[in-house]
Structures are given as C-alpha cells and as structure tokens.
Amino acid sequence: MMIATREVTYDIDGLSMVAHLARPDGEGPWPAVLLGHDGVGLDDYQRHRADELAAHGYLALAMDYHGGEIFFGRPDAMLARCLPLLADGERMQAIGRAALDVLLATPGVDPDRLAALGYGTGGRIVLELARTGVPFKAIAVVHPALPDANADDWIDVTSTFLLCTGSEDPLCTPEQVLTFGRALQAAGMDWRVNIYGGAKHAFWARPRNSDGSPATRASRTEATVPGVGYHPENSVRAWQAVLDLFGETFQTLRERASLAE
Image (cartoon, rainbow, N blue to C red; front, side, top):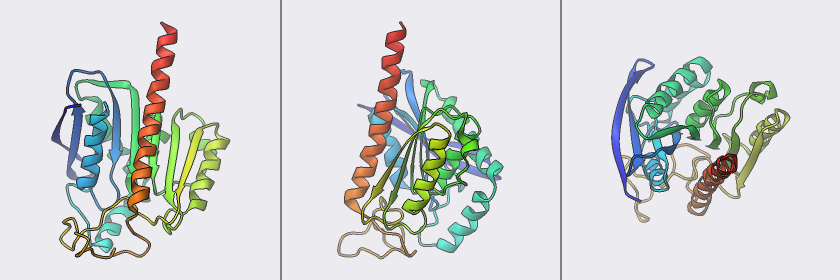
C-alpha cells in the first residue's frame, strides 16, 4: 500500500513538538493509531513504525514529547526530562491529549476506530490518556513506565491491552507487568502479556554509534545504560504481536458492524 508522510508541529508543555504523521494513500476513513516514543525521543525507529502502520491501513501519528530533542547517549538528560513527567499525571495527559487532537483532526481518520502504541515513557502517556476516558479500542505498550496497579482506575476503560516486556528488563520487570495485568483483570479488562525470554529494556532498539547513527556489526557500540540491550528476534516478535492485536481488534469491530446492518 502506498503511504504519505509529513511532519506536524504543535505546541504543548512549553515546547514546539514535531510529530510524524503517516497515512495510507486514499480518502479513508482509516483506523487511527497514536504512537508514543520511549524516553530517548522520537527517532527513526518510531517514525518507521508509524510508516509500517500506514502500510497496513492505519493512519498513524508518532507523537513528540521532547520538543524535537533526542537524548541518545545522554541518560542523565533523558531522566531529567522524563522523571518529572512521570511524576505528573495531568502533565502527561495534556501532552498526550495535544497529540491526540492532532491525530483526530487529520482528514480521513475514523474516530470510532482508535488505538494506541507506546514505548517506555510513551507507554505511560497513552495509558494515562486511556485512564481519562479516551476510547481506545486497543492499547499496546512495550516495557512501559507503569502507573500504580489500581483496578478502580480502569473500571470504565473499554480497551483490549497488550503488555510486553523482556524477561531481563530491570526497569519494567515481568513481575511489575503481571501485577498491573491483575489490576486490569480485577477491573474486567481484556488483557494479555508477552514476556520475551532473554530480552532487556529497549530490546527493539538497534545498536547505534555515539553520534546516533546506526552501528554496523563491526562498529557496534554497547548500551550506555545497564539493563538495556538489542534482541533482534524478540524485536520482530513484539512488533508482530502489536500488528496482531490491532488486526484482531478492528476485524472484530468490522464483523460486529456487519452483523448490525
């Protein structure tokens, strides 16, 4: 499927954000996906994921919450930006809502077929949006920064959840993910968990050089943060799980709409 892409700028949190919009060729209406990048920033990985979603028939917006800045190789600067965000639910909700408004205002979007995908801090942002009542039909989060596991926060949420992490992730452990999943279950949610054996935090992120460029096998650099590492096989598996969730969700919606006609 042919796709079209463009940058979209908008202001929130005192910054000018530069998001990446990808859409299928045609008028739609298309199911829509809001994508939240991890703490490093909106880089080529998330842009390419938005492009791949568009190639599968989704209108996708990869939000920005760093004002265009990339913190690769600067973990202290990344934490200085992300930790205050993670401590302020209303601020995360405002950042996510601004990006969602851009997505919903895009011609061709179907507001009744809405999904979210988030990595790390971006996963927490989309979860905060869901908690405020945004009607996502499906939410996939990969090693998210999880909120407290409180079932009461999710009783009125209607999403299907996919929670992914690595078995060796020290920042989003399998135990934390399962604890959060049990809270979703207590709230009556449809949820699933994928634990990827041998995978660390950010297992989807290909190695890069100190300047952020892709590393060749010979010049491959080590992660600058302990507990972070690339796992090529599980990167592919996690992405396929996201596509399966969205495909299953929107196929079910189409079947229900057909039966109602």
